[in-house]
Image 1: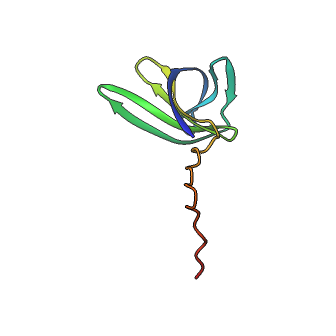
Image 2: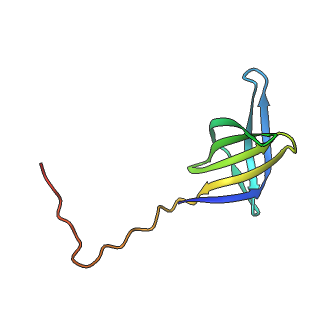
Length: 102
């Protein structure tokens, strides 16, 4: 289940001059270190006069969204997927449905 976090995190990032891309490599959140294994999309956004960059990344199989504020150079963990799906919806007694076949 995706959880909104919106907490500051410590980040180790790198910059590749040939691709001109910055990428987070490790984050520390709540005393735990997460190694970023893949960065998917990088999305620049304006929030008022501030330019921020959102990074959709993975720490192993754990999806997360990081935000870099280009004015303060601070990083926020915006969202994280805890690996648990949404809770199953209860089926009322007698509410089971038989499968439909073509």
